Length: 141
Image (cartoon, rainbow, N blue to C red):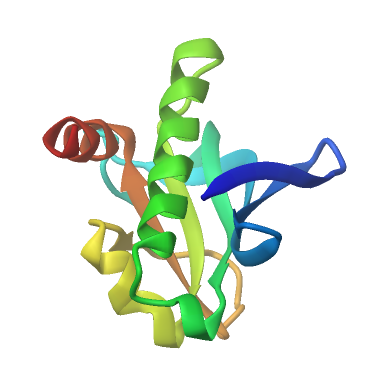
């Protein structure tokens, strides 16, 4: 499987997972600010705006390619990107606005729910602090 950039607007980057000539999944990652993070940098709240977090904007795997490790590889790539960003310009973790049906998937990686100040109700805001990302990556190495 290879990952390559297919779309870049300088606001986000989309990477595809390809098997041969077939695209089997993709992930879009962007940066931004997070509204409040606790002192341990592991959970988020509705406190002041904190800059520098990676945002997993989209993650999808073709239906017939699911449960083959592709989603996990894309998530690992997202985590590696967040760690790299933290070393270069700062990053406190990864945030995602999960669809209701995907919450349990993200919870498997350690993402936690957090409160949000807007009224959007079609997604669940979730956050995973960089310390937990780094620990998870070191355990799988």
